[in-house]
Image (cartoon, rainbow, N blue to C red; front, side):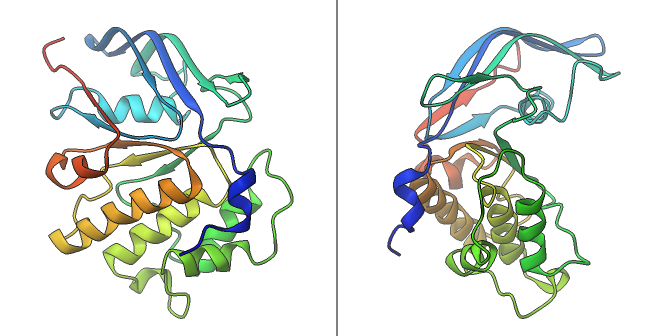
Length: 229
């Protein structure tokens, strides 16, 4: 596929920087004064055993867990730094992050086209969007539009979830276990799609996963959370 016309003007990703980040769930410390930089426009795997805090960190980065959360407390600095040096925090109203959830979180009562369009309609800071943006994106990612969302296969639903995440031109896309529950062949197809999408649109892509064997071949960088500290 040739790159879309918008590619030349599309941001080449946003750098995500954590400084002195401590995360605590109840009495348990998940991260202790952690600092790391996720470079702009790369595919980064976030690895660690169950319960180490990967998904909690993803939800904090996504702005889904705030400082007022009853069970999770965190301190330190989280910055999203764009190409022009502009900095935003996870609580910023123009938060530049989209999430592809493990369960996809699609709206079954809406068509595939409507699932993407609703993301465009509710995006913040979005420039004028071409009327056919949703349809073109679904065609590029090979998502059928002639059937209900609820009857799409697992791989098709994953592609739809990715289309919805990148449609609003958010600079950072977070993937929560993107190959979980998929058969080996479909998981490999989704892996290729994530790499292809990242190369076409240059979004900074952070993948929380246990599936190192499938996803490590597309990673530019791997961040391992130590389960002991």
